[in-house]
Image (cartoon, rainbow, N blue to C red):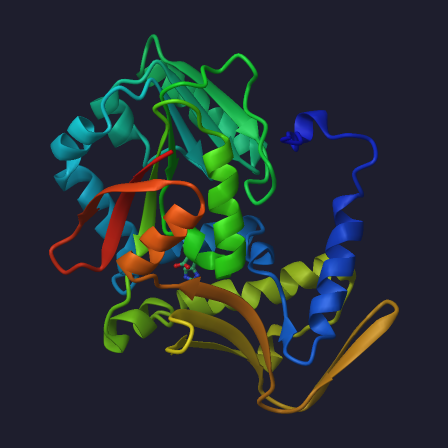
Length: 321
Ligand code: AVI
């Protein structure tokens, strides 16, 4: 059974975020390979920096996905016809879904995102732009079970999860997420999901270590956020951004590397780092299509059509529930 995590209706027993974050961060920092969960990359400044990343010449995923959505539009509209309910997970500013709304003309749209105010404003703009569309915002953490409006039709739902964000979860968590997505669908349900494909290193690594240093600022910013959350004394100047492709796991890894031996302290704890030791901050998996389609099958989906760019760098994958 799905449990609501709509923060507007958060149950009283929910732990305060700061408490949960504190335990999570302390635990991660004390692991032999220290780690900070990638979700802490996205405070307000982190979100702004990520927006900047998506416009960098080196960061190909955003523009490649947008080009696929634009170029494959008519074929996609044909394959996806009959979906009356469009649900975008991690909808943010609802920018990417516009092209689908124009082509599919669904009756209902639901944007789901953790950032409630931002989402509500974006959905409000969509409602103005698409008269007659029943547009709704659901504030929820999509890494947890999501409760959709009870009166939303179950048949004909299409889940849209663009941006290759699924790649930021380890495969077991990604599979669990796909299973939860499958659980949100009923008759004639479908999923349209963006994935980043493996490609030569000389394209992959600069996308996560750009010449302007925006990704470095994005990665380092997590330390300020952690300082605010747990009262630690990280100094950004002591750390360097590191991003590399781990071939064994087919993933980009982002780390922060200590420039010198140092001790980081926070109320009730401390961690000593030797020079060169790292904190692992993010993985970004690059799935070969057959592997991802196998995961879809494991999650209960039947893989459908795939749209890709001429270089096969990115794919929009359709699957039937
Ligand atoms: C949000 N996500 C899909 C991005 C990615 O490419 O894995 C996050 C990112 N990290 C550094 N650059 C972009």
